[in-house]
Length: 640
Image (cartoon, rainbow, N blue to C red; front, side):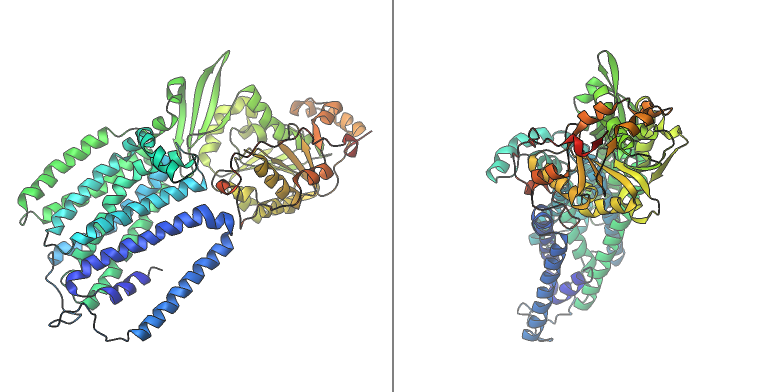
């Protein structure tokens, strides 16, 4: 794909004097196509036709383009002069350069740095925006589309001007300063997104966009669009300066060099921001540091123009840094903006911005005690209230009470540690906990009073890894596999709700093993989707509690009164949950036959079609699941 831009440029440059505008048009059109691809893929293709079919469609489009190029090459044989070619010139006649060779090489390195800055900004923006928006697939789609829209729009706006005899080098220096200021103040504009949202509501409503999308669009546009418009405007100017004054053949080669260095800088920027800047400096300082790259570029370009434009160059060199410092000092703290009113009611006692996520632990006065809360990227993850702790403890305890002799267990996801902590209290069990984020592990130390000092227990082993990846490569076999509460609509959650994931869980179970899955949802359709998918792998599924816990097994589940009461006498057994046999009967809700009748035939969640993440494709205003009529026969499970 990277090789196509210089090839297209070589075939479409035309007369030397229109090279700059032609390249700008090519870049704008290419980026506009990327916007369409992002929106169509994110909003329609993956949910409606699936990942594999989307790949095939994209491949088909490329085949059509390739065939069209072959036909056009036969229709317009090599050597046919362009209709725009002047009678007295050839396609290889260069035009006078807009900058000296030394200045042009400076432009080249400025755009290598610009690529670094652009992707580092994008990573920082994404981390910032998910603190105020739910981290869904739609949020990431809109963020990407906004970045691309700014780049395409900026390129399209400046391209018609490129034929004019303007001192483009000093213009580029001014643009770089504007980029630095717009970027460093992007958190501030995000903080004003509510004001922008009121103006956008009527427009978006007229376009029949879902109300869920309005805050995402407004916050994303407010934060990203001003900077990306300027970045888009700068790119064709840089191309014009770098390719001016050379032959057509050399110009196409220069396009390739220019684009390659820009993309190489982008690779470095994405890695540096994600793995170094954000964990070391945090969001606010990372934004200032990355924005400063554009400031340095502006000063360097201005200094190179000192002789030809002394007044403007002097202004940019002297005033630009002062303006940037003032803007940087007034840059808001994004996490404070994300939590909004909560910051006034809660006290931050710990925060860590890491590679994977930003974790914060707050305290809130909740009579008669102080409640402790964990936030992941601004989203509530856990708290130590009695009700929430009970829900998590039940997820861990239920399979341990149902299994006749659990010895090894796996918990996917840690959160505050309450789920794994309850499970680890069972006498004689060895527990593996797989958590993706080191920061979450450190944050769980603030919840030792509800996770029973999980990390200090000798029978617990914590791995920093992706839960699905662990199941894919591990040779361990478990009696119980469960997971902390993972919200199904968050981006990436589909890989922990798909049939393929549950098949990995099934493979990791020992004979007689149990899989426990929390089944929270926001509508009946979503609820049945999750249940139907789970049952496609575990046909012997039972439903427990308030209908949020499924227990899957490969054989029919039974619980003997005599055996259960004998186990209750073991030292430490009642530390898990002091439930007697009758309590277990009351927790039972329904069995395989009732559940199969309830969900009926229909689609399931797969890696190819993770519609749980693309929830706008599900029925809107879907009523909650109606479980009142879902009553099973306890005698199917409970024995004397």
